[in-house]
Image 1 (cartoon, rainbow, N blue to C red):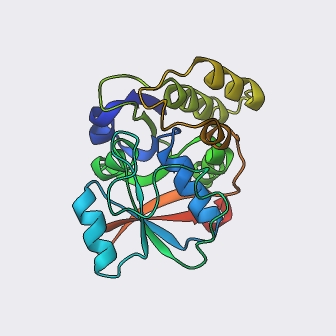
Image 2: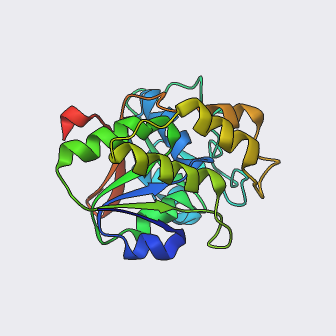
Image 3: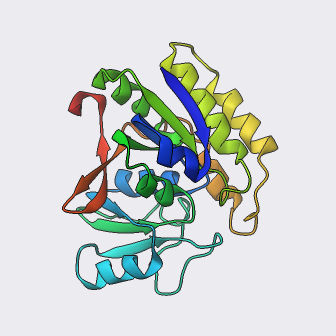
Length: 226
């Protein structure tokens, strides 16, 4: 059974395998960082905690946003284009965003969590299939629990279609989002970010989030890894 919900409330209530979806831009940025060699990403819901964890040496650099803008003291914003050419070989990063990482933190009822976006869509589907879990909750995080984000909702529909064995048109899905998505943070959302975020299936791994030593740790996972 695959269900789709929106906002933080859906993340709190979600069960089974939970895919928390944030296309623009949190989990696209996370995918780019992992693809560029990051070993893992610590996902938190608080700016001060992120900075404190970096100061403690748990991670080397902080990335994220509030209101679409890079917070003071952070190494990077929430932009996949910004880090597209940055190597993070072996690093642990710390990420916090207004919606995506918050949803991961709230998904306490999940048997397994994935951080979802278009770039990792097929890898996420294959990882879910390989798990054998029958219950999947797709959570489109949207914008601050106020407005559904078109890109997150379409991504959820796309994932549901693939999980059902259908073959949705990747280019059509990307074009649909590119021409219809309305965003409050249009100043921060650059054309380069949009291009990165809509590169469907451009990374060969899913982003699995597990609790380790009290922290939520995101790593790259292929279907073969289980």
